[in-house]
Length: 359
Length: 262
Image (cartoon, rainbow over all chains, first blue to last red; front, side, top):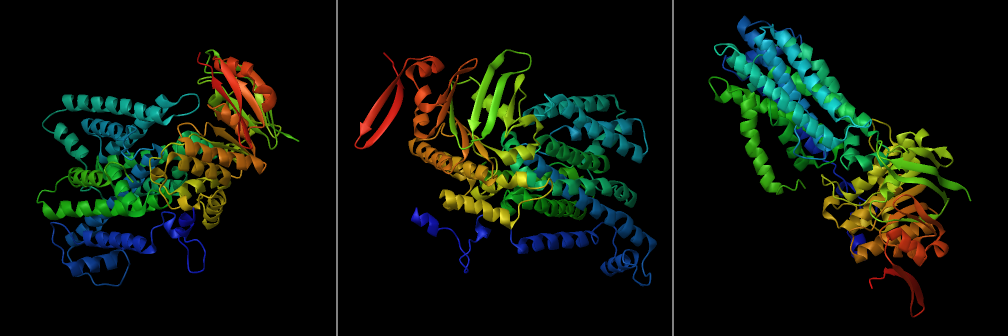
């Protein structure tokens, strides 16, 4: 027994050094993550096929965003590119990257399974089907976004309803119902694709679903930012309860957690985030699955630190991938393809490295 | 002595199906250590789930400190009643200290996380139990017996007035069983009110002050250990012929039971 006691780390004062007994990343890690995000964000304003001189970019940002008294020495189109194309795109990348990653981490905790994606309850299948309907009906963009968003919510609503038993929604029932609802909406989507005009509408549906930040404008940010930020805040606030819930519902209830309330908050928040992201940017896969893993290696499994870490790293990842999309390809590869092309090998590497044990 | 837990004419059944058990009456006094015996599937865990208000009784009521458990809020109940479940691995490699700290949950608000004081409290409990050496180890990497001790520490961290143990020694090896039993015995000696289910009737003589035997439809027998632990009651409860032996080794006396296989 004695050698065990000697092994407990103590500070010079004799007090127990808790830093090695809990997962608490050093402030340096947080600062590095934040700085990386800031750098990637700023860099993204300089990248693109339309050439704007770096000093012009700085001046445009200074004048337009910070209202500095700078003389206009640039063309109107340069200003449009920086303020109306690159800036909203970077903001959306940050919001969606952070939102999807936080959603994935929350679901993985809630479902006690590190392989779960934010789309497990059928939100992406529902939202894709909604977008396809919008496209076939030739609705205006805002209409397509609205229909897509609503079908995302509806799909998860059906999943929740199906899994509701005896005033509870057991985790296993949620997963099974999610699979059923996903399959149904995917079949409906296929049906729409099958009947869609293959000259125009079928390609439009296909491209929409591939996922892209290319069409995001300032007005999209105005619409999407509030629900995304509110839901991220909800996940952030409830993050510690995810630790308890991840020990199993029986135990978390005995520990005084209102499981149903935590589950419904997490489900609503992730569903709104995922529906918004599909409605505005199509399906951006793998972010919600890979980033939480990567962050668990970085800061440990404690959701108190894992959730903020996924927020920062997820934002970094999506903005980085979007920068790569713009930088390396002449005709921009859709973002959803690249997140998977980069994400899958990273995931495979993590699988090998952790030997599937996630420890 | 005050009655801590009182089960009054309780019956339970899933949905509209047959009852699992019916007409159970049981009083647990403050500071008592009650062992609950019964064959597999007789509904011991179900009874715990009813006490925890996870399942609803068909008839009757369960009172904790004289108040119906159905009138407790979830976190209020967790402050009064702790449950130690059978150990199982976790999906994520939290440290043992982090797992113990989860015991603070009922004392936290909906959106808050434990602070340094909670961490110190958790560590202090591990120290008192003699398992501080586990604090920094991953919960997924320690032995089953150690995990069970960590879960007991987590329950103590809740600061409950009463603890239910659901077969805490199942699928543990010999040494780990002894470790867990020793811990339960110490808690009982300190005055904690305890109800423990067990698959091993011999545990009753080791730690119990009272015993209740649950059969396939209701209580077979209940009362003080010396009165109730008879060959007739055990045989009836388990449906096999059980013999009780007294054994002496040096100055140590013990009593145990064994099924008669002949």
